Length: 568
Image 1 (cartoon, rainbow, N blue to C red):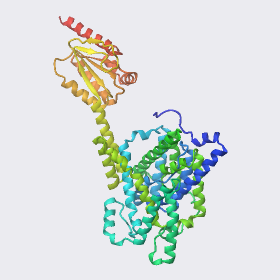
Image 2 (image 1 turned 90 degrees about the vertical axis):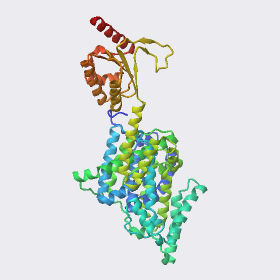
Image 3 (image 1 turned 60 degrees about the horizontal axis):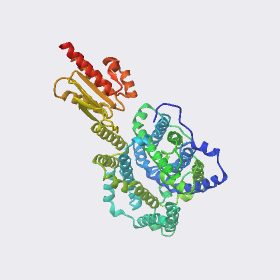
Image 4 (image 1 turned 120 degrees about the vertical axis):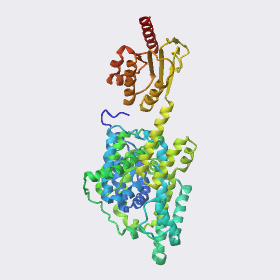
């Protein structure tokens, strides 16, 4: 990863069209139509669960999906609204309204673009896996919780957003369960579960919606006393025109308030899209341009808010559907967006008839698939530090919110990582004799005689602030006669930070004040450059920075001999 260099923005669509063929278009056309049909119920369900109308979900899938495919760095990525954003979108709307959501999404888009321009496409590698699993499982449980009202037909208004009060309200209203609505939800759930056993290519969610919409239409028409709530009942008749773009008011106060939420959307979007792209690469053998993918995702999230849309990211399930149906270029993703546009323009009246209980069943299945309970079970066999990160992230996501979960989870992971590195960085002390080949695969051993009055300290690992303190404590606690020369062997130090340089400078000055020489040995070029910029070589003398331990020991022995002669 490099933060410098030329802008890495090369959309896959451009390279895909250079050698495009009719046979490839046929495959992309079939895949795009199938994915568009599969994406329809998910876009509607995710929008409703996020607290916005189905129209918003479809607009997001159309515009966002088109831009992700046209400008992204993955050949088969399908973009749109996803379940991962439900909780944070719901929270932003509750606290800041729809305009606040638009501003947060716009800011998140800018952050994603900057991440791509600064070559941070490998950001996924720096997010510990237990954190990803923890907040994904937490999101899954929260999504599941939000669907109980519609699944059981409780008819509750103003359901609390927080997890515990929400379930408290559910339990106190168990007597309001509607048997007909619950029956519709259960049958919908069974259809979704059963369809893959018939054919894995059939979209279970869509088939469930078609069947149960017809059933509920018959119930509502001929048995009105058993009325089941539909999308039309909840949201009224919806517009079938693409909304005109509109702006939003920006102020520093608003930006400051929404920056944490925007950061969460950006991090979550980058994680989910790059994970999806990585999985896709493993199946297709292609290579995603990670930085381009982030820029494409960012542009989609910059544009979508002007049309009232919600955050966009790569969707693993839809991307895999695209692959399994033959999609291999971004053209399939563009066709998927066109299919959704045609449905939006001509079939919206039918969407009004979809029962809310059926959508609740769809999201219950989505939450189960997101939970990754098998992965959670596997991590529980890992070290306690991984389990603690998973547990903390999960609980914070469920009980508080995703922003806090990601921030605290990352902080905890960094602390535990630094502790592990500090524990694994060894500091050894040698006197009298030193085996040059120790710690290497060399079979020839060269033993150096270290003169009395010379101490050799070897640092094995990164020399950063935690290790610098450890090294300083070891130097102070070393017992015995005060040495005349201290050799610091740094052949296995890959990097140093400012704290280590500062501590080293203090050590050199205090040693010189006591008449003790300090010699550095085996400093690699990058570390040497940092030390030279800090003036360490000038402080100890350029001749005291040796390329090899043999030279350093020979110099130290000469210094001790010369001082012995001078005092005799």
